[in-house]
Length: 89
Image (tube, rainbow, N blue to C red; front, side, top):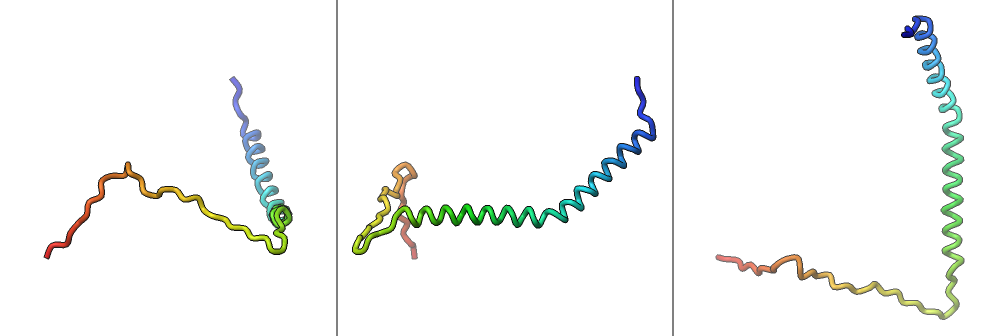
């Protein structure tokens, strides 16, 4: 059976700490740039979708459109029995 040497354990812990701090510094340096890039790409995508919807339907002069909502029966007969209460003096 192999035993871990004290020098090997300390070396491993030192490497882990060093990697942690390097990643922390790199995140502080490149985090804002990455965030700016991601928000720019998302804005371009939203703008492109907006433009596609605007260009897909351009109403001509004098055109009238009526949009109606579907009328569904809002009351459900399976809900239960309706009881009318009267106020007693």
